[in-house]
Structures are given as C-alpha cells and as structure tokens.
Length: 130
Image 1 (cartoon, rainbow, N blue to C red):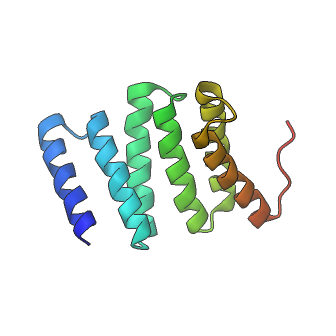
Image 2: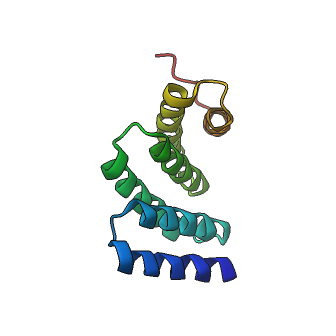
C-alpha cells in the first residue's frame, strides 16, 4: 500500500504541474497501474494502463517503444481478466513495435513474445500465420 500511496501522490503532483495529458503523467499512471495489478485491482489497473496508453499514443504516435510498453502492460491485465483475445491483440501489437524498433533478439521483444506465446497456448488458438 505504500507504493500505491507514493504513486498516487506523484501522479497528483505531476497532474497539477503538467496537466493530465503529459508524458510524465503517463509514466506515473502506468506505474500506478502496475501496483494496482499487483494488488489484484484489475479493473482499476486496466483503466490506468488505458489512460497511460492514450497519452503515449498522442505524444509519440502509434508505433513507438513507449507505446509498446504500455500496450504490453494492458495486455497483461487483459490476460489476468480472462480477456484472452484482447490480450493477444495487445501483445501482437507490442511485439510488432518492439521488433521494428529494437529487433527480434532484444530482451523487451523476447519478453512480449513470451507473453503472446503464453496467451496463445492458454487460449488453445494457433498463432496467426499471416
């Protein structure tokens, strides 16, 4: 709970300083989402990740490594919520962005690919071959 309070305080300070749609605010919203996910507050975590993603997409565009980080985090909470098709879509998007910017062998790409592979295996669906 200490981490949650710290992130909520940092978020409130940054929102007051920068406004609600600043990339620094998105970082704190994303971090708060991670804490909420760890606490099992999945709906609140989803909302936080969606908010961070929306800010990042406006700030950086749809194909940026920061966007991929937030998409991956959203995919993780969607997986936890049992929304496997939506999680798969999110992980596929994040993998594509990371492959483009960082390459197939980068640790971030490999981590998200493992997330995607796990969702595919869990859902019993075959990987998209297109």
